Length: 177
Image (cartoon, rainbow, N blue to C red; front, side, top):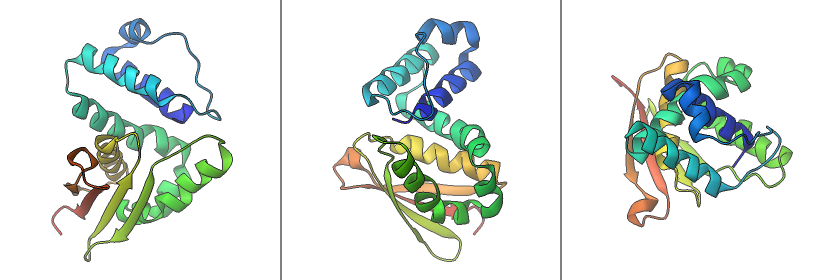
């Protein structure tokens, strides 16, 4: 998992719990943005946040994803957000504009593989595959990015790896469309 994601999760934890409680459940580890870290440690941090908030794992993943899409990645890729203009255009280019860049520049990084295609006149279809199985995180990222770009979307998962499907497949449609 990319160090930036760990740093973002820590920022989200501060937003949820405050600095003192965050310091209690996080160790002193520093996450470098140009380094990949163990997936197991990320899962353990999510579990600590679940326990501290008494929220479900799915809710924590989704809410963290929304935070990362609205705050972290918007700050890291401001030009891409601005140039996209809307969430559907953003999503159609995210694999090429962000994930491929991460794969090339960060040895050992394994962002999920996304296949994104237009879906009707006002939507996209997203196929997500990853050994991490963080489909709720992806859902949150879409919702957070939409909020940052001033769009309202409805997202529905029609297939899920957690139900033994080969991939998680989502429809994302502009609300009211």
